Length: 156
Image (tube, rainbow, N blue to C red; front, side):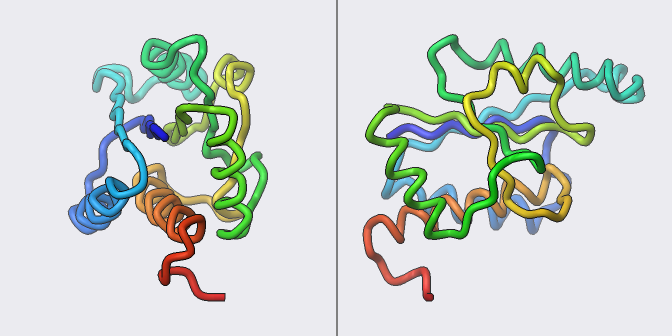
């Protein structure tokens, strides 16, 4: 299975980058994992939120194809336990050769991206920065694959 993670904005904290890279390295045993880091031009970063969301939407849409299965990491999405997420991934792998997960910017997603998405997942009822979500997501993705393979990482 191929999994792509699209993220708006780069990570400014070394500890997040190091943790994320550790899980990316571990994920190579389970899937082809691709990262697309998208950034809006710095001159536009102080625009009004709706304009920023629309610019981010343009970037996201340029980086996906019409047949990509898009899953937004969004506070309005379904919440899963780690085991439920593993089952979700396993089920999707029966129907999809690849999945694309998207982490939005500080203001979330535009309506256009919500309309394009095939699904939405919430990693928590709490709000996290887009920087730390990439680390949390990578760890949960790794955890899900170890659950699927019955490997001793996840404990009940």
